[in-house]
Image (tube, rainbow over all chains, first blue to last red; front, side, top):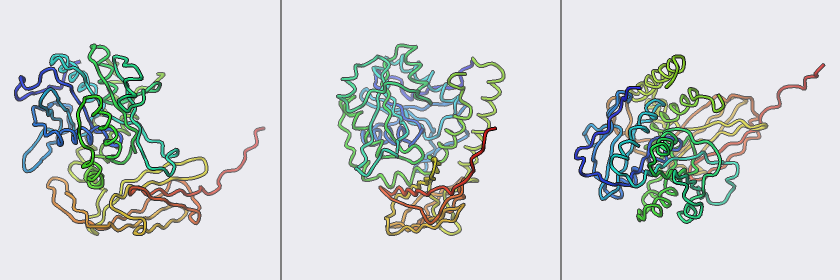
Length: 248
Length: 143
């Protein structure tokens, strides 16, 4: 199949042997909230973008400047890819393939995927909510290592979406991958779940990103991200409708 | 990678998703705001269980005492004032700042309910309304 996606770096020497964090709009917008927060708190400059004729005809405007919807940020061996538009199935597959190939070419130490699993509100009860974070790694890290990071090993189940495609490519290409899945309200933007996942990221990457601002901005983020949540939800609904059957 | 039939399905799905995304980004189906009445329409979800229907509204910036709920057998309406004005960028091609102080929404329910028996709770601005389903259906004898 012809590749319809390209990763463009403004200065290829700026990214070398990085840890690569990936966050795209999926259930609860956990990946995009957490990865954007990491980028903002660590003041990561823009280093490139992803271009594809599979992207919708959209440009995002920030402070009067037109921007690509999928961009790469980073410094000091940390790179972050964020998407401000939901990815439809073919774009997800292409992005996963190209991002993992590009990561290999950059001798990436680890691809750290941030995503979510639906939060079971029935067992929520009245106690204060503490979203759990599940973790799955391509290199079969022992359960103990995952637990020390504050995550629960993802033992059985099915993962779907962009991060599933990335993980699959990582297995094939022997690229280390750790994917974190926070329990989230799938149909509402969930900064609380993003804060929980950042605490695990801090342990996994030995960073010390403070989550207090994220907690403080929680209401504002939920309001600001309503539109992206609505488009993402519509996109997810259609993805499910077109997914090949598990046993098909 | 895919046979022709799957490829056609994929392309059709891609086209539909692109259309929806473009419509949303151009603001033509922007149902999250009622600009004429200066209202926010909340995100919500509906779950149907065996004996009840659960509707959850995402109402950031709202306190319990500022919410009013009314229901009929087939619809549910909520109105809520925000604790402080909410300033958001709104619009399609050109975005502008708009200030909102109220959420309002009426939804048609997918099943008949018993409106008098609705119970609600709110936590972190997420309002959850549980309503028993009206009895329906009869036993059918297998001959």
